[in-house]
Length: 117
Length: 117
Image 1 (cartoon, one colour):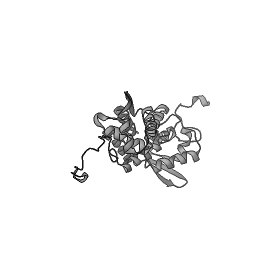
Image 2: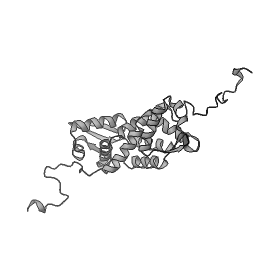
Image 3: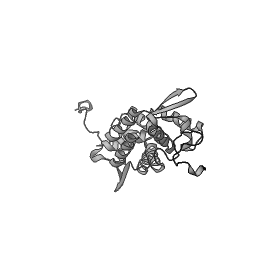
Image 4: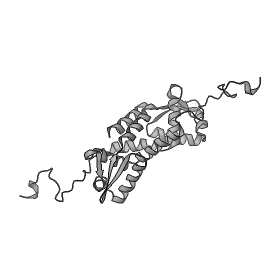
C-alpha cells in the first residue's frame, strides 16, 4: 500500500488531532467581526453609538454628541468615521451638520454571529 | 422670580437640546462592552475563539490552536490572555497544557447589549 491509498480523512501519521487550518470561522467572516469589534473597542465609541440609538428617530446630529462625551467635534467626527467604516452607523449630511443613525442590521448580525459561535 | 424658582427640568437658557452628559449607556457598561470589543477586534482572536467553540466539548488545548492559525505558541498564548481578560474564555491547566473553553454567558450578554442598543 502506498501513501496515496490512505483515505483522505485518515489521521496524520503522528496521530496529531489539531483542528484543520480551515476549521472554525471562515477568514472573511472573522475579519468582518474583528472590524466591528475594533470599532466597539473604545468606551467613547460605545457611548456615542448608544447616544445615537437613544436619540429621537434613532438618529443624532454630530453637534449634539460632543457635550455628552466631553470631546471636541473633531475627535467625535474621527470616532464616527470608525463606526461608519465598520457599518455600525450611517451618515447623512443636512446643510451644515452631519446626522448619524444606527445600522440595526449590523448590530443584529453581530449579535447572531456571537450567539452562533 | 429668581433663578432658583425655575423648574428643575426647564430648558437651558440657550435653548440647547443636546443629550445630557449621563444620557446613553452608563459608563461602566460601555467600558465592559469596549473590553469585549477590543478582544474581538483582531481576526486571529476571533478565529481562535471560533476554533475553541467548535472543539469537542466546546474546549481546546492551546497545543491544538497553533497550527490552524499558523502562529507560535507564545503568540497564541498572548491572544488567549486577551480573550480571557475580557471574560470570553476560561483557562484550565491540565498537566503540561492549558485548555480553554468559551464563556457562553459573555457571548450571550454581549449579543443582548448590542440588540438592546
